[in-house]
Length: 116
Image 1: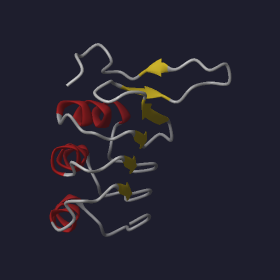
Image 2 (image 1 turned 180 degrees about the vertical axis):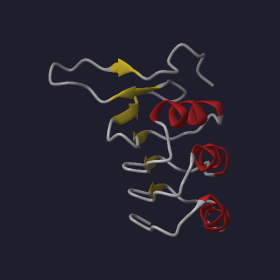
Image 3 (image 1 turned 45 degrees about the vertical axis):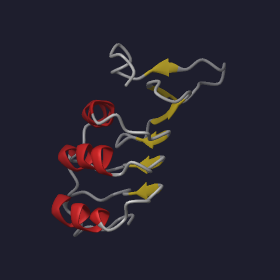
Image 4 (image 1 turned 120 degrees about the horizontal axis):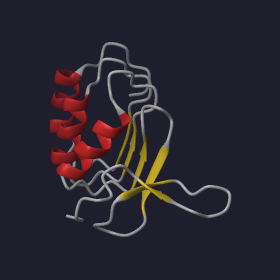
C-alpha cells in the first residue's frame, strides 16, 4: 500500500479487518495514517512481523513505538516514519534501533517498560 495518498485510518482498519494472517505491511508515504492506526495495527494484526511507516508524516516515531509496545505487538522489524529502523532481538523483548557499524544496538524509547 506504499504511497497511497487517499488511505486514511478508517480505510486501513477496514482493509486490515479482512487480513487476519497478514505478516508484512508497508505503508511508506501514506501521509493520512496516524498514531491511532498504528495502535490498531499492533492490537489487531497479531501475525504481523514487519511494518514500514517511513515518511508517514502524521505518525511520531516515539508514539508508534509506544503504541506497538502497549499493544504487545509481535512485530520483529519496524521502519519508523523518520526512516530509523528497529528490530526485536528476542520474543517479548523491546524493539531496538538497528545496530551501528560497531555492532552496538540502542534500545528504543520504551525499553524501560517491562516486556509483555
